[in-house]
Image 1 (spheres, each protein chain N blue to C red):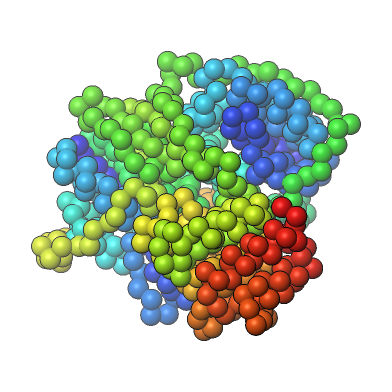
Image 2 (tube, rainbow over the protein chains, first blue to last red):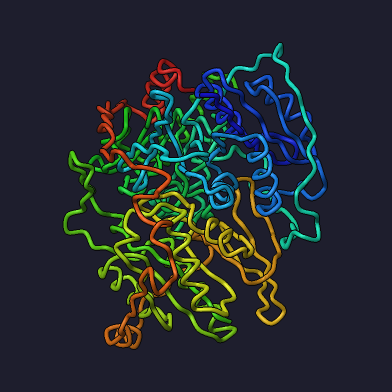
Length: 326
Length: 265
């Protein structure tokens, strides 16, 4: 069976999303002698296409038309559908970001395709794809196999390694025309308000330091944020802290916030309700700091400190500063 | 303006889930509730109605038990509820579910906006909103944190969408399919009057025939994906080691030693 896999390379302000490169690695691993095409739309498409080729794509289809400069679902879905049909793609891959997820649902209808969201593991068994995905916020796992072709799936952030770049790889980059003209697109991108610019995003973070009810108020996040910054990590929060209005929702980790999977998760003043655990239980190593020795978070943690976060966290920041020479 | 809210009935988020060897998921005594994300959609629909008038119809696909979720939505402030059910729908994938919903919305007719939560907390796929928008050929506005402006007469809408890097402000045309995130509002509790209204409510059920859905397009038999197994993840064994010391500084130094040795920094 010849496989042809299409991978959408998400990009923002000229940079590719890490999650798309992870998806590219997945595509390579299931291609089995077939080909991998990167689809890159946006102002810096050509450079990002070449980057995608060094990371595992065999070739790329690009479009840097003005109608695709700012991401909008309609023109993106229309062009992806055309490329997928023209090239007879068997598998279409997205990173499981907000954009990747919304494209998947729409493209599935457009192509009458099987859609599998948020895949954390995938393999080929006798030529067939077998995927694993979390359900019920990761409380359970499901094995999902496509029953028809084509198949669209999204890969969960940090569930797969980023492939190594190989500068020696080369491939064709083909420029394609957009399918929808600007007048045919009903939505208009008015503006983009970036938030927490310069901060590490929760989804991509290798290290996350989160605060919960125990931080006591908005000011209580200061030492937590300082530790996150010292470690080059992202700041997170529990639902209790968000619902109390101490920190914006974008920082929320858990069932009704973000699902994260860092190498190190430091939970400060978080008791570890089941909904919070759902969002961070796939972290590689968890450290819990809490005054309550009975808090459920200690059951997940590898290391625990029973104590006052306002004493422990600044001491940790100072110690890391010394040891990491930062 | 006339609004449809699509809701799914799910086990409560605090439920302890069990799964047997045949992949049957159970949740003990935990209640089935309105998908928490959909509560934000219901609330937003009510706020839009309070401002612009019109009618809110809430839909849910499933057997008779979904009437409870529909009644909750009516108790909060939705006007009408319709159960969509036919054994032919059982086991449908996102393609089938979006088809059933699209046909129901077209049957109701004259709808300006469809609202849903960004995903359901059981399947967690987030596929239905965008799939439905595509089926209807309507504007697709997902992960909406705020409706900045909506003009049902002029058929325009401007929203703030919560994406990874911040907020995208998108303006588009009505009708639209809108999926919402938690930040958009604080859902209200059902009112006493609402609960009374809901308790007397007769919920009509629309079947595949009512909806003009051909049996060959929905259900397990034509599903494009097969869930071969559902299982519990291996238990996470933290085997917590409590780090102690005489002072916060001493505790910090010991923990930093351990974390550097684990090579996670």
